[in-house]
Each structure stands twice: as structure tokens, then as C-alpha cells.
Length: 122
Image 1 (cartoon, helix red, strand yellow):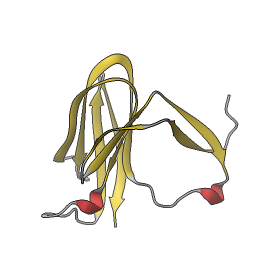
Image 2: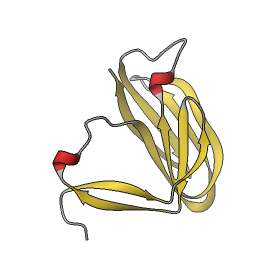
Image 3: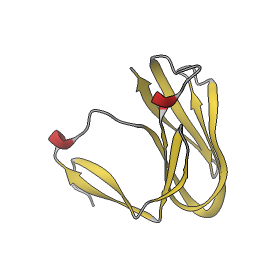
Image 4: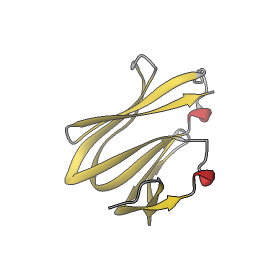
């Protein structure tokens, strides 16, 4: 059992599965965590969402949504094998149109589950 406190997740031997100007998808066989001092916490959190595929494979769809949960842009639609994944969105590279300041969501549907992560554009 983990002690109470703040922990940082580490991706063990991550591999880049896909990368372009707007996003990066990494995969790892396993993840680990380590307790950290609160002073070491970064105030900047990237626009990212974790995907944990426990089945042998499943279809994964990730989309960028606005604060009203309207789809702005699909980011990923793929069948992924078992593993730990992290999709990081490079929202500062959106051009024509760029993302206006506000709150956004990364929404994922995979293996019969739906999860969301939030991020802000200053």
C-alpha cells in the first residue's frame, strides 16, 4: 500500500507509437510511481490523457472537446494492443484557427469505457 502524499508516474521504457505536429502517442509495457516533494511539482500540466488497455486489443478513440463537450477535432481512432499509453496534445501548435483561451477536454472511448482529462489554454 502506498503512503499518503504526492506521486509522480514514470513510464518504463516508453516507445513513441505516433507523433505529428499536433500530438504524440507513447506506449509502455508498464508504469511505476515515486513519491515526490510537493516543491518539485510543476505548475504546468500538459494537455494529455492516459489510456490503459488491459484486453488483448481494443478500439480507441480520442477527441478534443470544448467546454460544452462539443467535438472540435478527432485526434486518434485506432485499434491498440494491451499496454499503457499516453496521448499528449500540442495545443499551442493549432493554427488557422488556433484554440482560443478557455477550458478544453480530451475525451477517450476505449474497451467500453469513457474517460476525460481537462486542460486550459491561457
